[in-house]
Length: 239
View 1 (cartoon, rainbow, N blue to C red):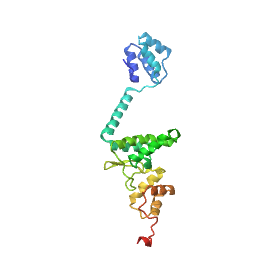
View 2: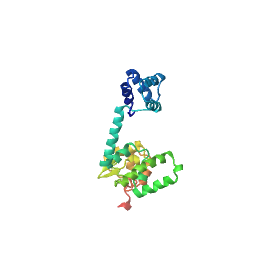
View 3: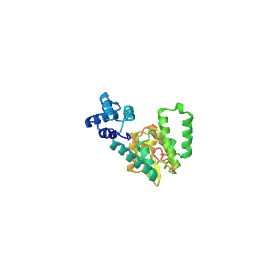
View 4: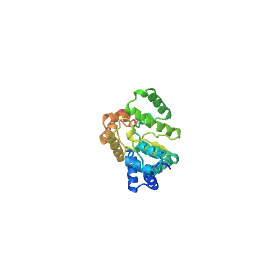
């Protein structure tokens, strides 16, 4: 026999002839990591439970019930299935939900750029900030994604979502929040504002989105506002 989940303990002890109530209490004590009370250990010896089984019960710190364990296994299989057969959807979902410090600037500029950033992080691994350490964890999955032939699409203000990564034409569109310094409020404001159509200038964009200057500077820096003039006023040099 083997102890695979908490149910196994109670069932096995009952089969050995122990009192059902005491078998249940023994299971509960073991699965909570509390070990065995003297009366439990004595009853197990009287039922001729092997010493290795008793020693195992004394070492266990926590155990799932069978249904809980089965649910975890089923979920693992489902996740693995999507990762194998629908990789783009898998990575998009993972980056949307599980990524801790995703950076558009560091991770979405191609595989070569990603490797440069990762090499820099590894060279100063003992000096990384907490955010950089989390970012390096995210980079490892991005690296895996690139190795499987999946690419990111350049951000498009009129198609990107605030928080969710999307699969578009087989590529992954990053979220607005993946931009360094882009908070959830600004990202949501941009997603809502673009529903009203295009913008004539950066001033109009800022007025409608209420983005702070730091966000405007970042959007300009990465080229998302490069096609917009600063204001709606027409210069004679543009005629």
